[in-house]
Image 1 (cartoon, rainbow, N blue to C red):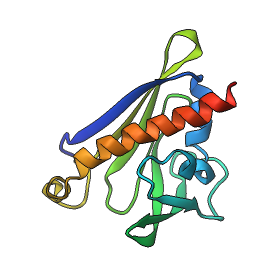
Image 2: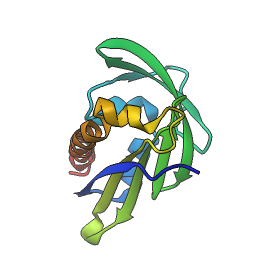
Image 3: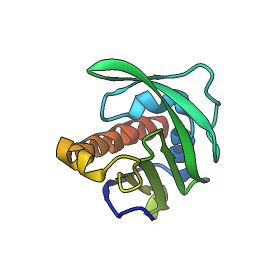
Image 4: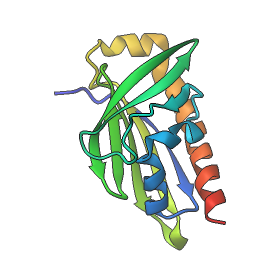
Length: 150
């Protein structure tokens, strides 16, 4: 059983859940809203749309360039999507319809599911860093979908 080690950020976005979910489910567009500025690009062999169990690769840069493969571990259309890579910590987006066609979006990072000792993430300061990155991601996500809704 995994430990409850989760941090999250939340934002109301002026777009419907379908518009937001469609963006999250398109791996070619992840670099558009990545607030950590580590996602460089998706891989050409990625699926056009993610689904439960789908695998997708990302070119990343955290100091040095690297490539990572993720697997979708939760896929509830217009409500939630989550993925993990080899380390097994989970990135999750939850979408809740709100008033006036808006959506409350929560992004979370769960390192309690990791294959590595959770204390390593804490020692490196990732939970705190990820809250700032998730806040930036939600700002960028809003900017992308609110612009397309105008």
